[in-house]
Image (cartoon, rainbow, N blue to C red; front, side, top):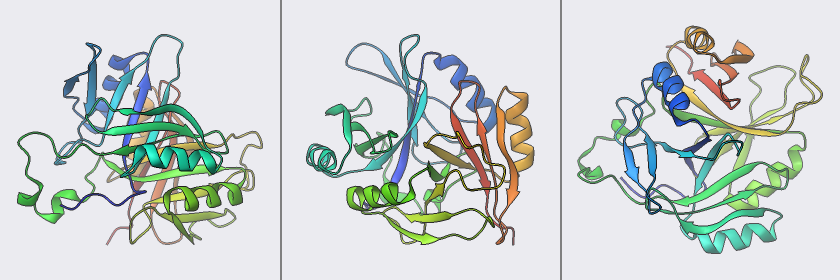
Length: 269
């Protein structure tokens, strides 16, 4: 396996004051497991391990009561310090300066010009005992319950598009899958789109006050059934399961801690 391309979004972090609640919800919904790693301050970093995947896809950071709850998208950077300085010049704000991540990589957290929190991160390499060269390529294809897409909702498409193109090298292509909505596929260090930009405030029935957001979308075999399970576990459906013109099914939800996430299933056949 080669090093992930710069700008690709392959990691998430969940900030929460209640690690147990997060584990209970996502573990029950997707079958995630959460191996622990000791941190330099004596705490524990809880990795997010999707069932059947060779590597973790994220981690859980425990915050103090009343501090931020959220899911942070992390994009690959081979020079976190240099990129943080460069992105600041493009209008980003550095929230956590370049430092060593709990998983052993380097990272920094920033907000984009629209106020969305994101991270840049240098992966630390495979977990001990795992040799990527011995894994078949199919092992790295998204499995049910794993991160397979990301989305940025923005009320200023031009500003968001321009920032991430300059900051992370993203490029875009129109996605007409939902009539009446402007949506662009994002090629984030990938040959094919692996995420999307959604213009807010224009879709029929869309609340005028919807704020900019970022969120991960997780692969599932049946979006409606998974959405129903999520609701039974305490989630809220924000956008009911929808089928695009080319057969992809998706839904947007909010978990019991108030964090946005999505579900999607590729076209059948």
